[in-house]
Image (cartoon, rainbow, N blue to C red; front, side, top):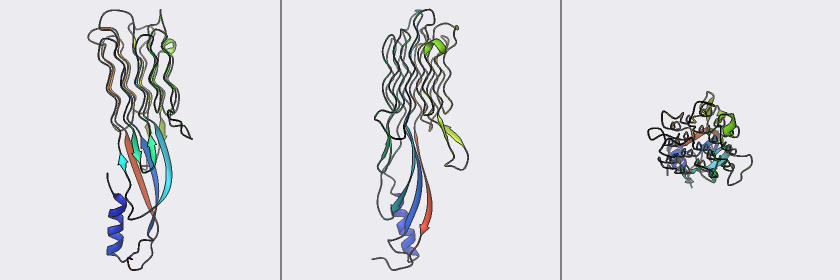
Length: 269
């Protein structure tokens, strides 16, 4: 629990500034992305859903210095292993009273993707996408995952991203794109959903969404992991023993930007 405000207060005290020192603070809180699901580990035509992106939340606060607050960065969800296993949800990220929910894990077969900051993709056999923005926030922290498509496509749904929903398997199962932030001084996109996996190349496996989402398996390699410190979802697995595992979700990130608003040169009370 980094106590940034206590450090700032100690510095202020050294210069004779009082407890009325205030700080304007901008924050970005992105949770860990969900893991992509693992598919069957034999040569059956199916793919598994991509993980949903971690919840994406921004805002501003005026904090009173010499007051502790909590910062937690959520870990990425674990990938589903070969043999039809769902990916797990990512971990929540927290700043003070703001919590971003971990992305929903992808699922397999005809199972629904898990709910989360953004929803995980459903399995190839008409599995529905998971519900994003769970729990509900305003503005929304994420979007729904895509649904899987049965024969002849065999492609699972993409995980939802902060900027858009994941695509259905019939459209390639792409992960939803994330959302850009310039809190660091340059524009960076976070919280992209993981792509859905497939067995054959027609249509191709789902691509990971912009913002760290991992690509889905094309039947020759395992699902790709989401990028670290982006909250990107992991890609879903394909249907072959060497490619059936999903990808892990990417870890989240919490970024705080301080601006000193006022300083009162008075003794500490």
